[in-house]
Amino acid sequence: VVAAGNEVENHSWAHANFGRRDGATQRADLRRTSDLLARLSGRRPCFFRPPYGSMNSATVPAAAAERLTTTMWDVDTLDWAAGTRVNQRGYLGIRARARTTLPHPMVLLHDGGGQRPNMVHELDGIIDWYAGHGYVFIGLDGRTAEEASN
Image 1 (tube, rainbow, N blue to C red):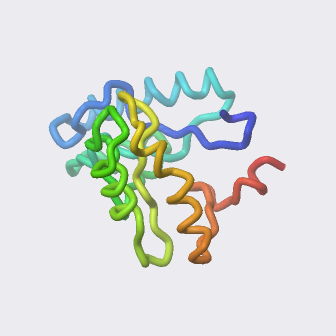
Image 2: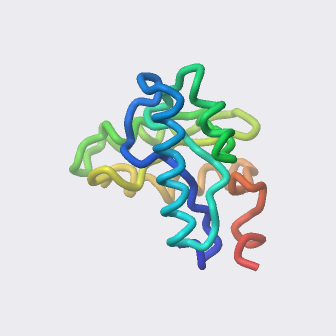
Image 3: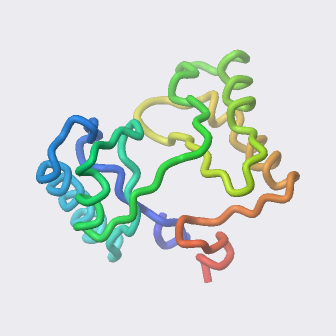
């Protein structure tokens, strides 16, 4: 994944609700995850997205202490709730929620934690819709896929 120019970032070790954890526990979780990602990829992550989008007053400082910028999404497709079988209601819901007129949206989609056939069904269409509306896809580091692979 990294060799292909993709970013691999921190989403926590245990996928726990950070809004319910103290700062020291959050920081230990983030450090453990970043250490593993650095060993596997040869590079430390720079960004962190809290599971469930849940944070408390300790989250951003804990992430910053681990040299991580906390990121969130603008558009939640709820793809995780669309079921484990392709169904029209599931994929049409993802399609409708994915589309926005925000100037620089960050769209939340999942690739793990279970089967996501409805998201997979809609992904090419979501990408095509954004590209057709003039959006350019960039990573959190501000580079396009082409720039990242060079």
